[in-house]
Length: 93
Image (cartoon, rainbow, N blue to C red):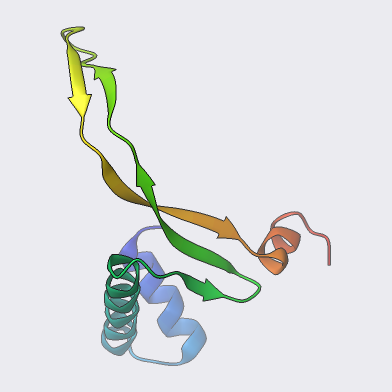
């Protein structure tokens, strides 16, 4: 599902116009980005938790040339699914 499909589904289920659903999705993404950038977690009980996680620098190889390349340390996001999401995905209702 891409962004346009998500906006359409959100609009359909919520009864909002697509333009308003798009603004809601944009606001959600901005809030989550701000919270994660501040090194805090976003927890949606039952759905899951997004948390920032540090990654150490490491050596890798350029697949085209085989040349070793150093990947710098950075932060990434870890998603831990919640109980209800896992149950819904595995049909354990």
